[in-house]
Length: 453
Image (tube, rainbow, N blue to C red; front, side):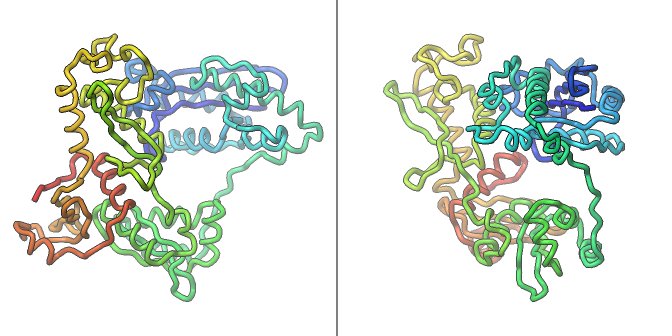
């Protein structure tokens, strides 16, 4: 018996997402014998790009049941079933996370239709649910909604069952969760580590650094390294003999130190992190009507972006927020391609820059405010963040738009001139990675204190 599932979530940080909608079809291999479909109140904010993708917003979920109210039904309909999903690792992780928050251990066997499709229908241009079903002639309604995607997965799974002529491929792909036990060396290492924010260094038996990382909880992160089943984690587990760390207090300091240490030491298993950490940038240009336009493009070496993003998804999420915060036009920010007015103008949320109704100088003033806020070009400033102890603060120093370094100071010690500041700063390299780290951190942490010098 199979429980074919699709889940929509709020988006956000890994393992902090909440369920907004769930659809489960109980399938006996021939027909659907039971189903459960429901919106879910996640009790947390939904990311703007998710609202745009799914159409599910907070107002729709106010009267929806909370997860604990539907948990019993989910347990019942999936009992003695293999969970089937398109990218099963994601849906199963979300379910386990929600049940863990309730103090309940949810455990099922899983099957992934992405993996099965690659084996049974090789050579496809894409294995995303939308493109794959379209290529196979499987009708899909309500794309990016739980019910529509779950029903499409049911039809895809039926096709995969019929293609598995040997009746072995599907059976061989069933995954059973295995509880990994730590060896004594790794257990001793974890027991000695603190649950603090900082940078950690994993060493081999010769003391050489094989991996550098940062975490807001070093003990928890090292435990993940030593229990994870990924290929890289397994390699690290084989040769890891000790772990050292440096407390930073501030996540921003940890990010900057991690970036510099990786470039300097080039650890064996940090190859992916040594590559550029950002892919997209925010750029501006003035159109023929004199309006400042904003657009997201892939970063390049010839143009300097206002700010940068790790991926297109975070860039779009940022754009949706600034359109609302600064009352910008969807058309002039690239969110609503049109030759006439944008959608927000129709609902009176745009002042009409899209049709030259709002004066360009008035509109551009708000765009400039945004640019100044999100760029530290030519600025002399310090960023004050948490320190390693309760009576300490960390400080990041930027001179004329260039990151100069970081340090720590006692709360009783006032930073009131450049000479004092420079004496406590440890110089660090300024590069595009550090600019991205600082700008991204300031976007995400509105309460961080910045002082202009």
